[in-house]
Image 1 (cartoon, helix red, strand yellow):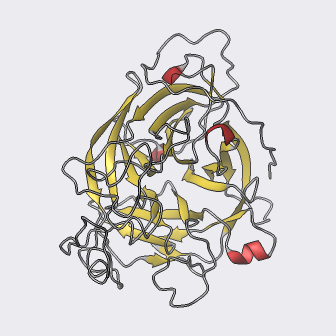
Image 2: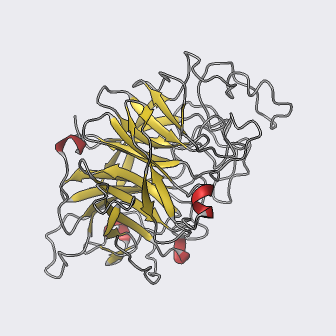
Image 3: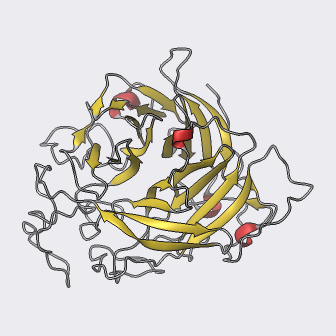
Length: 419
């Protein structure tokens, strides 16, 4: 298993919105170094048109005070690319925790980054997650949860029961589309897998993870949790067959920490909605790191975003690894090879107004997608309404990157963007 040390900190370039450049490559471009070939951003304050106000349980930030005029189109924690250049993007639980996200409606949106103008267009709400068939056996916020709450924030009133799911119910962090067109979501409160139709409606009860529960699990009933909050399924890969999922925990379970394996993340295998026995392990370079995203490249290789929990000038470690799930030495671990250091990307055309070296110093980088054999797309979760990635007083935006790899990937055709 590859062991790569942490790099020294790289100075940040100032954020400047401008036109991306499509120019003839310079003679001094290093072909052995990943290169930024496209950049765009979505403004921080992008809201779903005509949507309900939100943020009643939060104080907001100096940059974006709460409550907000609508539902923020932010917090991208999963994505799915289409061949027409548009992307589905999944927002996470809202404002960072169960307690402050009851008025955030879980959603999947469609966006269209345009690297020619450096702007990302919001094309609309694809769907909200919901449970009209009542598969969830406990109260949800918009059907029982709000009604049983004794004190509500000023200006907020309980919505009519409609079974729309909110950030009080689940914290989705990963998303895949199955061969049959249904959607799978990995979330962190259980952690659970959620299976929906193509309009976000649950098709079955939440699928629990064998032997793993977080403090926010609604079925905890006084039991001792063994996974910290916000350490559930940050990444979930899907095999080329469109039926086999590999959900991956963001943090180590208590049993692994007690055994001296605090840097180990468990990767499960789920076939047709059922967990198989056992798991593989991915070892982070530090127990202080976290998973950002996890997607398959082919039947055995995958991309993994591994990151530190720092941002801005303090950020050091934001990387993408190529992992091999075959476990050829049978030690229970996937092998890993550094693919991209997101703090050291060549930027010969100074896209986005940045310098010759592009850095991506956001706290959470949670989206990677393969566009072709040698190009990937990367996006950050901006943790709306947070600031600090590009300056302490600068509200974080959702940046979109296209990175040309130094070497091509062996991508299975079914995992490339489809119509």
